[in-house]
Image (cartoon, rainbow, N blue to C red; front, side):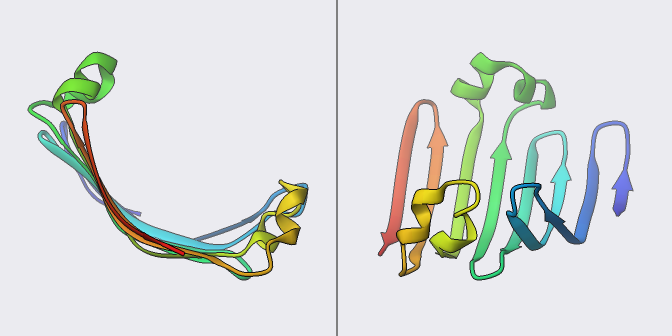
Amino acid sequence: SVDYASKDSISAHLNRLSAKEGKGFKLNDISFSLGVGRTQSYIKPIEIRLPNSKVTIDELSLKYDSLPQLFNPISLQKDVKITFSLKKAEIYGKDFKKLVPELKYLNKPFVASGKISYYKNNINLFSNFH
């Protein structure tokens, strides 16, 4: 639902969405809040649940001098600061075996957390994968 909207900004949230893809991929639930404004945009927190997997993203944010920068590929690459913070992902291959059959052999979950920031062609990565 939309919480607020004006000429140059919007705030909204998705409480719950589920889906089942034709090949059998199932999304149990996704929820998030988002905002787009004159100098920054965000989606946070993002909760994704599959039958066995769960992903929690603290935030995906973009900071910029003006909204049109988001729609200019050169400006997006040079002038927009991007931050992605993954609180925890616990992903089981069997949730994706209908899309990628080889993943059915992954019996243990892939677990990860971390943060990525990007600005002016510099990427900083802080991660924990196992």
